[in-house]
Image (cartoon, rainbow, N blue to C red):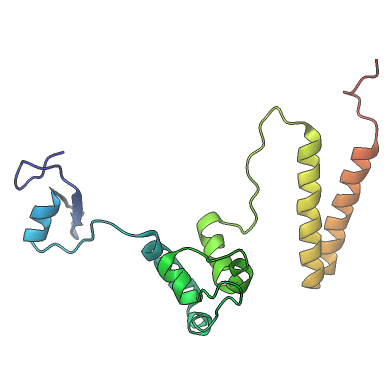
Length: 174
């Protein structure tokens, strides 16, 4: 799409204005024309700026406390991590855990990677994964002293284990 103003360059700035009567006005400009018209925009964002924008609303007051943290191994500070969007060593995951966990939950919806399993993979792998997830859930419920829910999860684990030990009809002996 060409710039609506100069009709020479590709439009890279796209603005949509919506008024009270739901009337939309779209403007498509190149960087130069948008700059000449004084439109507020930024052509590129660094990964550090994006992460920083995600971290700060989640952390609130804790960000001030995190600012003083430094990794004993590599010397990187939390401020450096935010600026660079990169860790200095593997220990940083543990050192800056309080600032990373909310970020991961917001971006990925969880802090554990589960990945995908190809459809051809044996049911045993799915069974093992389910057991591990339930065991993790059980441990969390015990830590938070939710014993009734923990008992339910314990029973689910027992049923899954019993099911695994019974001979499977689909496996035939030759």
